Length: 582
Image 1: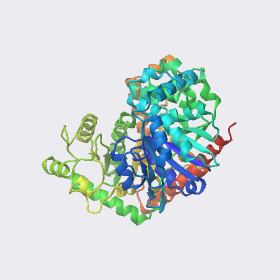
Image 2: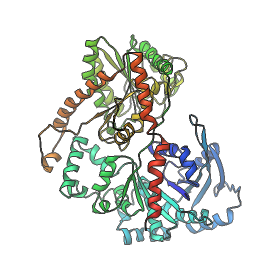
Image 3: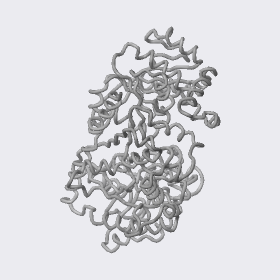
Image 4: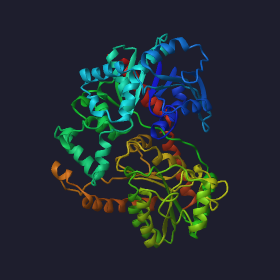
């Protein structure tokens, strides 16, 4: 299927969700079988990027260090001189230890920070003339400038690198970053190039959801009502053109196809404007790892976590709850505590104990030396102190809620681990020997992820095939995929927390929905989190037979959400649709 070109800031380094998607796609057996050639394209952020490429692959050509292993200098130099850019081109290695698949896609990094002014001005003029994008409004955004400047030289290099190919070249814009290049291809009119916008979120909507105290309760109810009334985002939430990401995403309907990672992302794209209702939007869910885990393996991993909890807290918990996430408002970590407020009483009455390990941090890894000192001096991670190397920024605010819960809880304790990693070297000497991150996934009984904005949510359902109960909010894109994989019989391994559900029989106007604030959301969260706690309590496995059933059920659903399934059922059909568009 021709050449697939992934345009993203994570072309070289896996940083977040897009990097996880690339890892999943590129190490899928079905992707390898179907896609003839893959090229990762992005900015050259630093001169150190070339060293990183050499460490995890091979540098084939570099205008910086004069590497030229395939005799490309003459042709490359012409483009370098025309656009005044630097180019590093090579191979990046991907491997999946569990499947044994290794692949070596090409990677093209471009430093266009000193792009020839005439080229830049002409391209920005054409963006305005044809698409109405006013680049002068975003001159202060280095991010916007970077991807706009990338477009012209990137297109010229793609023409050079694929000039002798007969198949289609698919330019996949992962989020807004690739949209200037996609628009350049549209301007060029060469139908050998087809463009796809890959919506890992809708950038316009995220700040609206996060920025108002009513969060998802307000936004999604208002969006649904507005769409019933034929209104769009600018009609309800005002002009968004000040936001450079919106200006780019607003043009995504012009691409040959649109991919959305979740059902709500489809709705959010439709909410962008009338034009988005007149073009196809294909669901392309994210995949998750799916491994068959034996009962002994499950118990071994859980035992390590119980031992760690006993060292920290003085008791071995009956149940292990976890939440692995980034520490950002969208993850709604306070909802974990709301559920635990109800669950704690249930555990206490049943004579059971639990621990919730929250693994989340705002900064990079603390040094092992700092961790040992904090562990020795004041009992980190059970106890914390404000200030680096311990709590920084929002970590300190969140930990206030953790301490308040722990002070009144009777059967459950929360341990907030604000460290990157999960082993003895980075988390201290009280962690058991041989502990690793996969123990946290395999040993969990429950994984939380009740986000206010979550286009998919890979982390929330990663422990699914290990038999864990995955508690996710209804706005998480993974809910749709879980339902499809579970089939008509459904599954008891996923609990959907609906914090957008208003009181039954209440029919609010659009203006009333837009006025939803802290008080209404608190009432809904309190009521609906009780329902979640009741479901968690009922579904927890309390015997070997229950645990075996949980493992079998988790694997059944998890294997239906693998990356091979994603590629075969969603990704490849979406590319074919883009290729066949007139």
